[in-house]
Image 1: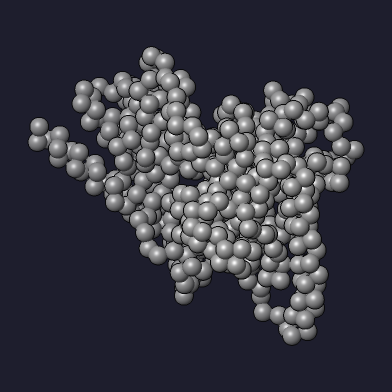
Image 2: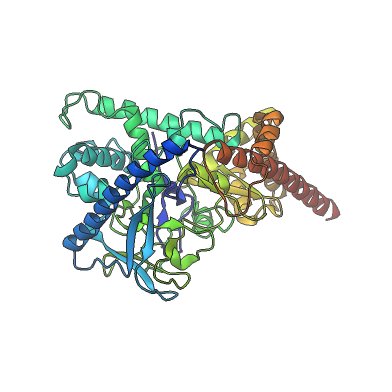
Length: 505
């Protein structure tokens, strides 16, 4: 089964793109064509371009009819079909820096709550996670086409062919034998599990007149749409970090509420743990029009979509001033790894060198810790911490710090019964040893010949270049290999420093 859970309760007031990301909606580079083929493609592309622009204009008209609170704020969505599938937001009037770029009414959102209230889907509320039921709802609405309330929006979404650069829809796994490849296999397996679950639940139920619906290809498409375009709504007016009960794990809950080195911007697949309060400001949702903006790595926090419970609208601001005709950008998230970008959006952007880091899920850490404890032949085991979802936690290890204090606290919390641990040194060392083992295990997955081949594939790429498919995978493989080696070195350095400090006491 699948869950989508943010790794820690977020105190920031914004709307995160699911998995922090919409899929590539930037223009794709075409292969070299013959002059005759180029003329044919140019003609058909122009027709497709006109058709998509008509659909985008219809989408705008529909949003205006849904609620008077819709405001395009000087933006129009235009097609990029002559360069491959794509939509971009263009300013038709000057927009000042920090000016509002759009205002989308909640009535237009396709949300989990609306999926659970659907007469065709509500019968599965107890069996399906929020993500799964939204997948089913999206596929149902697409299936009924013109009869759907959201049809003006759905007909602007990319087809499976348009999304062929999204890893879920690859015909070949370019990421085999890599850390990212393991994550991709998990996501594909989740799609296969979802299909099996839908088939089981739909026996004897009349949702659509097709016994083979939904197919694996359809579920992969819907999953790619949601992971690449959906938002997680957070109330921009709320500053309440929440109250905690006086329980045995209060300390751990407080840690999770303010982690700065556990990445609370990254969403991962796993088991059922996304049963978030499904109110308007705490839910997964597709937000028509807002997902038409492309990502800029230079965009700031103001360019992340925010939801306002008071006005029941989602909006974002301009991080720079725009002139008429400029393409307008939003941000898909900050400090995203190239693995995040590829698996979630379907592309990577070549950026200047920055600190290398690798990320591990909390439940994977616990599995590795169990193995390490067994190999050490210890008498103690992993502590059970009710209320903490390790699968929803992302541990980040970077080349400069190694594991930060907060991530270490999370890991140490599971080793409370370690002997001779009054100052926490033993549990800290054990946590680092587990991370070191995880780095080693992932490095063993990577064939160095594959790394060399990947380096040749991306030789000569330039900053700002957008990579897809095999080139994007090669970029990720090289980055992850270097990040794992750097993280391993940093963790070994941490272990040495802790042991030196302990021996001097």
